Length: 385
Image (tube, rainbow, N blue to C red; front, side, top):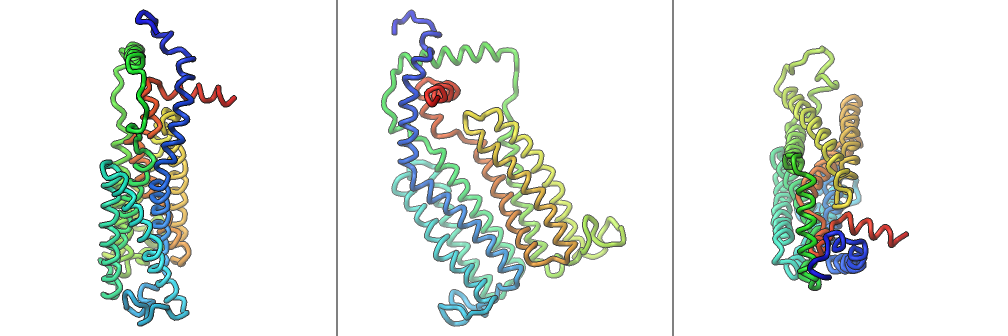
C-alpha cells in the first residue's frame, strides 16, 4: 500500500477479511494450546463447589462425627461402616482426597511447567495449593477437636476462599494471552491503521467527557461483601442455639418486636440485616453488570451478561429458600439448598469481578493486528453466511 493511501483504504473490508481467517486459526490454536489448563481449572471449580455443598450436608445432617471423631480413618478403618452418618462423612472426605486434591495439584503442576512466567496463572494456582493443604489440616483438626463452632466456621471460610481462588485461576486460564506464538504482522500498515482508528475515535468522543467505568471496582467490592456475608452465616451456624433462635420471618418472633430480646436472637437477626443490605448491593451490581455486559458483547461481555442474569435469579431464590427454611422449622434439605445457593452466589460474584477486570485472550490477537473486535465479528459473520 502506498504512503499516500487514505485511512478508509487501509481499513477496507478486504483488509479486514484478510486477517479474519488468520484470527480464526489463531483462536483455535490458542484454545488447543491452553486446553489442559482450562479444563483442569474448570473441573477444580466444579469439584470444589460440590465438596462445599457436601460439607454443608455433613453439617446439617449432624454427620460431622460420623466417623467417631477419628481422622483420617473412619471408626478405625479405611472402609466406613454402612450407617448414614458414616457414609455421608466419609463421602465428604473421599471427594476431598480423591477428586478435589488431585485436580488442584494437577492444575498447579500444569501451571508450573507451562505458565510459570504468567503471574495471573501461577499465583492463583500456587495459592490454591496452599489453601488446599491448610484446608486438609483444618479439616482434621475440626474432627479431632469434636467440631467446635469457631473451627467449623474457619473451615467453611477457607473452603470458600479456595473456591474464589480457583475461579480466579479459571478466568485467568480462559483469558491468558498467547502473543508470543502470534506471527509477525505488517507493522507499518497496521500501526498507521491503529493510529488512524484511535484518532477517529478520539474525535468522535471529544466533548463527551465520560468518566472511567467504575463497574469493575463495584464488582470487586460486592464480591468481598458477599464473602463476608457467607462468614456471617457461618457464624450463626457455629453459635449454638442461634440458628433456631428466631422462628419467624421477616421478624424474629411472633410478638411483632423489631429488636431481639436475647443475644442468640441478636446474632441471628444481625445476619438477616447484613443479608438484606448486601442482597440489595448484589442486585444493584447485577443490574450494573447486565448493562456493562450489553455494552461489551463483542469483547467478553456476554459471559458477564449471562452471570448477572443467573446470579440475580439465584439470589432471589436464596431469599425464598431462607424464609421457607425458617417457616418450616429448618428442614435438612432446605438448609442444604441454602448453603449451596449462597456458595453459588459468591462464586458468580467473584467471576463477575474477575471478568470485568480482564480482557479476552482472543482480543489480544485482534488488537495486535490493528483490527477492532467489531471488524472481526462483522467479517466472521459475513463469511459464515
